[in-house]
Image (spheres, rainbow, N blue to C red):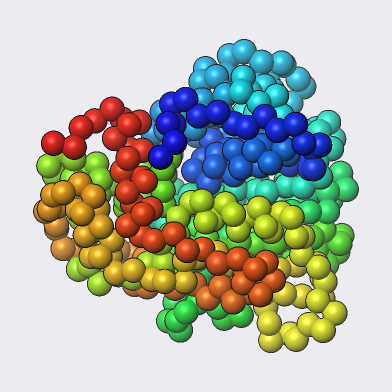
Length: 373
C-alpha cells in the first residue's frame, strides 16, 4: 500500500492532454480522480467549498495529499476567489468556491478555458436529506444549474457528472439497468440526482453539450467518507463498540472500490457522449442528443453481513451488532448492470471486497494513528 503521508504525484513530462475542472476535490472520489489525472499529465483545477457535513480534517488531509496547504491562507487572490498552486505538481491548482455562486463560477470558466468538466461536488448522503433538504436544493440543483450555464456560455462541450444508484428508488428489478424507469425516488438526494440527469439532457439537446451521468454504486476505499458504513463499522470495532445493522442485516449492496470508480470516470472523460442516430425511445440511457447514462458498480452485490465479516477478518475480531429495521430512504438491495460500460468503454470494475476493505483499514490505522489491539 502507498504511504499516504508522503504520496507523490507524478509530475509528468508529457504534453498536457486536457485542462479539466474537477469539482469536489476535497471529497472522496474527487481527490482520487485529481491524482489520477495529474499522474497522466493533465492540468487540473480542483474546486470545493470544504463544508462541515463531516469531519473537515479528512477533507484537509485529502488536500494535503495533493500538495494543497491546509489553511488555504496563502495563494493568489483573484476576483472570484483564491487560487492555491499545489506544492507537489504545478499542473494542479485549487479554489475554494460554492457551486451556488453563479457569478464566481462564470468568471472561473471565463478565466480558465476548460477542455472538460467533471462535476463530483454535491451535498451527499441519503439520510441527511431527510433532515436538511435545503442543502440538496442549493448544491445539487442550483449548483448543477450553474455548472451547465457556465459550460454553455464558455463553449465547454465535455461534461461528466456524478449521479447515484439511489435514483432507482422503488425499482425492485435486479440488476438495475440504466434503461429501467427511475421515476420513483425515495429520498430527496435521489430526486436531486435524477433532476441532474434531466437537466443535463436538456442542455445536450439545446446546446450540443456532451453530458454523461455516472450512477455510482456504494463507493468505498481509502480516504472514504466518515458517514459511510465501512468507516463507522471500522471505528466502532477498533473502539470496542457495537454497530447498528439495519434491515436486520438483510441488505445487498454492490460495493464498488474507489479506484474502479475513478477508472470508469476517466474513460468517460476521454469518450464524451455522442448523439445516438438510431435512438430507440425505449432506451432512456441514451438520446438523439449527445447524452449518456452509465452505471459504475462492481456487478457483484454483497450481503451486508458478509461485508461486516470481511472487516472482522481484517481486524481479527468480532463486532457486536445491534439488529434494527430498515431506515427511511434506504433500499434493501442494489445491483449494477454494467453492460453499456463494458460494451462502450471496454471496462468492468473487479476489485474484491476483501482486498478493498483491507486497503481501507490499512489507511484508517495510519491516518488516525491508531492501533488494532
